[in-house]
Image (cartoon, rainbow, N blue to C red; front, side):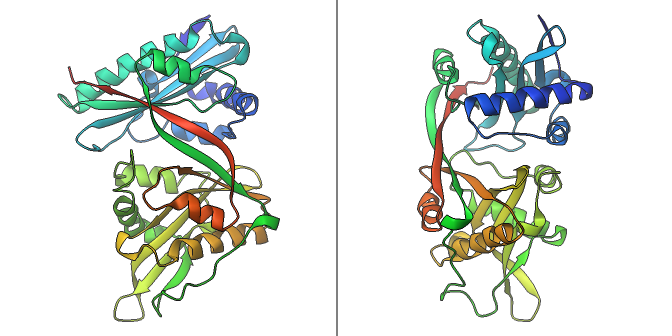
Length: 321
């Protein structure tokens, strides 16, 4: 058994393991090789210190990766740790070993980048069939939030049209690079009251919207003209991606807080989903905070989305050294 950081030439083995775990644990989190290669180049990621591959001979049997948010949330830094162990190698201490290394790295990285700042570490415990949640609890993590994965099929989809409350000059357009900055700013405003969300920097936003998986053609932005014919204000947006061929994933839905309750998100999401089904997609998926302050889960059920699985985010607060 050997441990090494994840090199670019390891990405194919990493993808094979990740997709095997997605099928075994029924998480739905499948990735193409290109998607994981991009993760090694994410802003702030140093693969040499922020990733781990665990090998038995030529087979990758475990992995771990660390992310540190570029901005604070509630005065704290935010770290997330993700990983997995092949089923036949579980309950042998491999997962704990990876967590030991990455938790230590999190403390070092925070001390370097944000000295004397407390931080949180988040880990997922939503995979059925193994003890990720139990391991998190044993390491001092506590259940912090619950999330729901939902999906809709063409026959169950119930779209909503333009709401009566919409401004007369408001219109939906496909996302384009020219809208990147206004939508990023709107995203930061819309998610400011959402649990665990941190403002996205320009680099973080670019990493998301310029990735292989991003689907601008199915992403929608609601624009309002400001005293003229040129749209200048973004009121609502829906961003989409494709991780599994033939399935569209709704990655972000946000509405300006001053424009909530007018039916904008239902309208924008309906157009995005309908466009996907018209293009031949067989399913549309999303994940939602079960306690979202906007009541988003209710909106998705209204459009025909149904619960597929539930997950738990575990969190630990770490005091600065």
